[in-house]
Length: 214
Image (cartoon, rainbow, N blue to C red):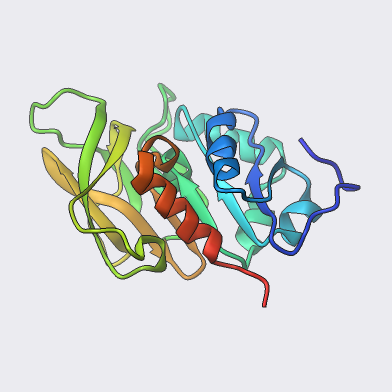
């Protein structure tokens, strides 16, 4: 974790230190691409980043609690550079999630940056969680530049964002669902690019190509 004396370059990628995610595999995936990447919860560092990654593991309730406890909600909402959520991080960009993690709450208020919500994946009898390699159909979003339709990526999830006007990639496991969503400078992927071999590396490289200094 960095502090306010940390010096970052004009091309630094910051992975948000949420305190509840296994950040090492995401960080290593960027480092393999020779990226300048750091993990931080420091507001000045985050605001100065060229781009920001919101990781996530566990449940939406616990993840949102972590963001609140680290005073990260307002700073995330204020960002104007490219911001990518990964797996649960994607789901946290939406308005609400039904993944309450055993709480009495009916649903969890998320960041509200992409106007959709997260609910149970209807696997139509297939085993849950949806875990393993599956194909995606992509749009012309910059995140998927050079990614062929039907490419395989690695998923681990039991909840999903439905198909909507904010869907930028789809997949199917029982039902069709959003493999990626986006609005303005905020977007996210339901799958794990850091575990998705060459296709995942290409997607991460596309993200690194965003927010490049002039």
